[in-house]
Amino acid sequence: GGGGKTKNTPTESENNRTAMVRQDGGRLVPVLLNFLRRCERGSSEQYLALLVLNNISIPSDNKRLIAMDHGGAHLLSRLLCIDPSCHLMAIVLVNLSFADAELRRELVAPSSSVQLVDALSYTLLMATLAPEEHAARPPLIDPNDHTIKYMGRTGAEEINLSPRKLLAAALAEDRKYR
Image (cartoon, rainbow, N blue to C red):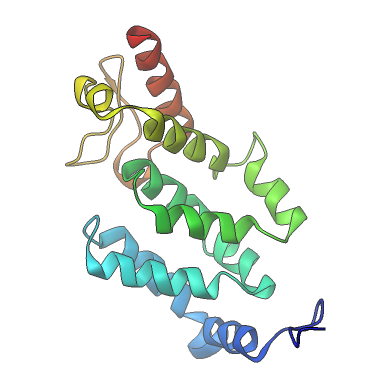
């Protein structure tokens, strides 16, 4: 063996990350998520909060707590729709769904309120646009209040936008240009 950890035996680092999430009455994750709601997009503060969230999302014992119990996957999937270029946000979402098959099934279920597949699909669709294609299309999300501009009607408000509705609007827009 190469001296690595054995399967199902947490390393000291994982134990520290798990303890960190549970200290002080488990306040770290809610505070981080609340902070991310208010952070300026692309700011060093957002990057730091996401980096911490990424690190604490690695231990298996933290995944469900962050993703479902504290609503981290729900919030991050919406924030990713607002800023599809935020790679670290996508990495955190992938980390949360990695190595826990039951949690992953819950996160990607069509009936899930998280709408993770829709958020990731929207992000991938935006990533496939050439810069000139992206520039030629009207924005689907109002940067001031994060409402969805969909067929002249307004979607959900603030951070509670629907990745499913956003993906549908983006696909409808995509059909106009292809």
